[in-house]
Image 1: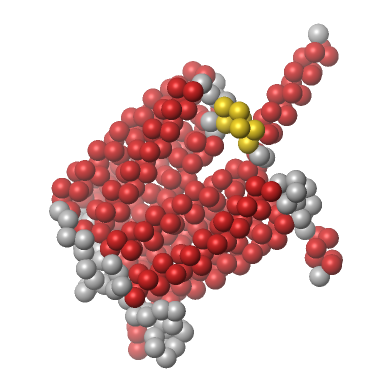
Image 2: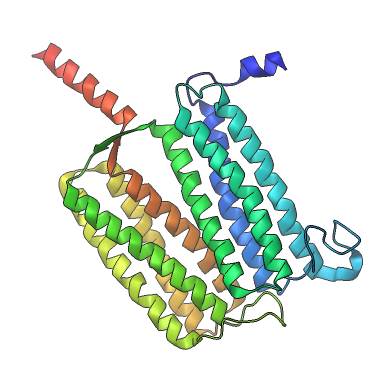
Length: 315
């Protein structure tokens, strides 16, 4: 045990920490995809109770068929997330004094996993209540955002709290981020009114799905327009991290808008709905990255000091 403790990183977020940070982000996004597969294959009640899969078994039985396998498979993925969360905690625990923010992020991500398991259980026990299902997705999106912060902090160090852009640019970015979250939240409500309930007998929220699809598009287009404007500003002020994040965000927004239009016109085919769900989390991830790029990181501040010192010596 002592040898393992000595092997753990002490003060520097090295390659081991970077790998586990990426694993955390990928797994938090992947479970959204598998959760979507549960819903879109009608397997939401494949395991009709919780925490057991049936009244007598913790695992799916052959009699439950493919729906039981799909739902139980999604539950198993939770244990993968738990292992990754434990590894993430261990990877940063020895640097808790030098990098306390990394420890806090791993704890938050770790606590989010059992919280999601409980919400998932409530979803099953309420027979896929659309509002509980929607809340389940919201928490997933928040965990994806936290995982992005974890990755960014591992690579770029702590934030200095110093704005790297003028205040009006920050206000524009925050407005864009609010628009993105509103788009996702309205999209969740749209899904709760549509045909993909996760089970043939599950309730819908009773709202007008066709009208909500139009309402969903309004903040989406506004967010896209604000993203374009923000990219123009980022190029003009020469903020490279912000520019890169916005290029990625705009690419995802274009694909997401295209998928949304096509799926609506084709009657919401399952594969496109699933892609739309995963892209929503990718979009939130990139919006988070945009917000993080508004402030100067510790590594940037050090680079700036080194540059100034070299300039003084050269003079």
